[in-house]
Image (cartoon, one colour):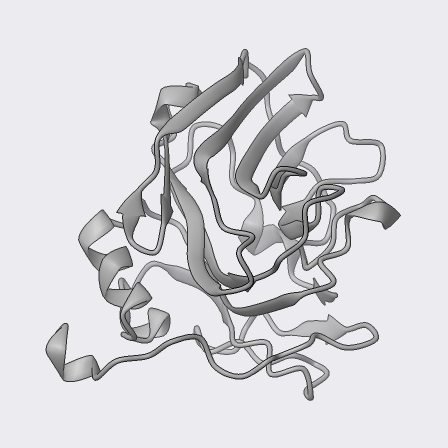
Length: 219
């Protein structure tokens, strides 16, 4: 788990645009392991990106869990014991239709579970990579190169990243965090200018690099 100290940089409101993506590697089919979270244990508000118990990508944008939230999931799964570039972009509309999910740079079919967000989702909780405010939500497999932007990232850029273009050179005027998660640094480094380093708890497993092709093919 990596805990980011500067929580204010991640105070995205329901009316803000933002994107969160990561390389993820897993073959699990249980629990709801967190990729990225900014949500307290009380589950009162915030952002939670997880893999659900069926291996699908699932996003919660929460004011109050189940009663005032956006909750969407991908139709596709990614728990096949291979690296995948997964995440979402959000358009600030306060509607579930404003969430675009993708896996490996390909748009995912979006399943809407809840679409009732109408109040603030801000909190003062520290962002976490590989965990949430719940002890059962640890990501115990591999994560790498977690990125947060304060804009929507076009699908063409996500396809380029999934083929090896470093995320930190994509929309680099709008990046908030690029955490490589080498698992040997504490504070964990931030390649988006270094302002959002994080405290490493235990270890972040890094099972080799995600698949990479020549960057020149995609620039």
